[in-house]
Every structure is written in structure tokens, then in C-alpha cells.
Image (cartoon, rainbow over all chains, first blue to last red; front, side, top):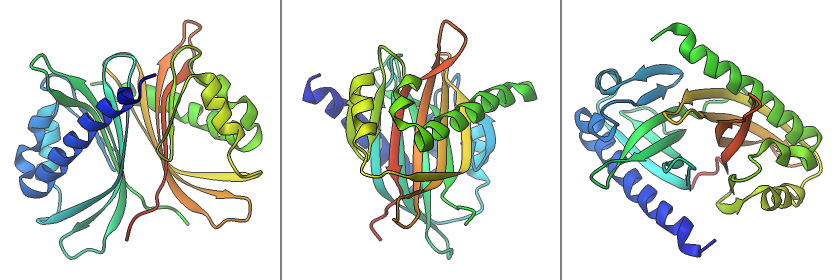
Length: 130
Length: 130
């Protein structure tokens, strides 16, 4: 398999992740525009949301004003269905809270215009039991 | 959307995760049988593998004898293509090493026999820069 096979997906993933966390930090009220207009799932700390309206509602009620995200690793893979899977590990700092580690999964699907939108999104803080 | 819509996926995800980590801990040489025979991707700490042979090769050369996994959270979602996405956060302890937190993404696809196999797998230890 050609070396650029993986590189192409990683390039899309890296650009997408940069755009997503920029909106997440700077303009959360617009972040729903990154989601698929017809089908999109968000699981945020175990809570399920589907569709842009529910997803926007969740982002709009996150209980912090300021958030800073530092991405540690971005891994990506193609799916057999023409999508891209991304797993991010990183750290975020919300308002005056201490930094927390998190993991986030994205499943991107292509748009007819040649872009990519989020079909699936799972977010978890890395809080372990012991 | 019916409440059992999510529950059904979560049931498959939970059973799959239990089977996967049982093999990972007890019989790693058999774990490739959980992957799709024709297309499967594994990204392990940034290294890319595709196909059962490469994936088995990676599992067989992991540099530890004994490993114990404690799963903290399992989140799952359906994809628009009939698959299931799973994100796991957990902790693992290999040989005499201290425990490490990890994140793992799985994309399962249905088999003609009614089971599920791994099409995509991304594994990362949660080691942050600061």
C-alpha cells in the first residue's frame, strides 16, 4: 500500500481537528455546522444526542465559558465505506478547573462539495476508577 | 428515537469488548480472528497495520508476557453504513510496569453469519506532553 495512502487521510484528519478545536475554543455556537445536516450522533460523557439541533443544544449548555485544548495525538484511518475515523487524545482546561485528559472519536463522511462533516462524535474525559 | 435503539448497540459493544480484552489478556495469538478477514486496519501507538497477517504479527511481537486490562468506559454508536463505533477508555498493566491509561477505538462491521468483526482499531496509551 502506497505510503501516501495513510498520509492523505492523516492530512484531512489533522486539518479537520484543527478547525474543530478552534471553533470549540473560540466560537462554540457555530460548531454544529461541522456536523452532518441529516444524521449526526454525539455521545458526550455518556449522554446521547442526535441531529444538529440536539448537538447545538448540548454545546450551548456546556457549563464553562473559556476552554483551552491541547491536542496530544491524532490518529486516523479510512473506513471501507469511504469515511475517515479519527481518535484524538488531548488535554483541556475549562475556566479555573485543573487540566483534564480526554479522548474523542470522530467519524467523518464526505460531502458532495468535497468537504467532510462529522457523522459520529464520542467525547470522554479520561477519569478512571483507580 | 426508541430508548432501545442505543441499548442494542451498547449490548453488542459491551459483549464485543469483553470478548476482545479476554483474548488480549489470555490468548493474544488468537485475537486476529476478531478482525475482518479481508479488510482490517490497526493503528497501534501510531504504527499502521492492515490485514489479519500484519495485525497478528503486531500482537505476537508486543513486548510483554502478561497484561491485565481494566475497562473504565465503553461508548458506542451506530454508523450510517450499518457499523458500530466503540470508544473505550481503560487502564492496562503489562508485566511489572506501572498501570497506564489508554484509549481504543473500534469500528465493527456485521458478518453474513450475524456476528461482528473489527474493521478499524486504533490504540493509544494516554501519555501527554505535560
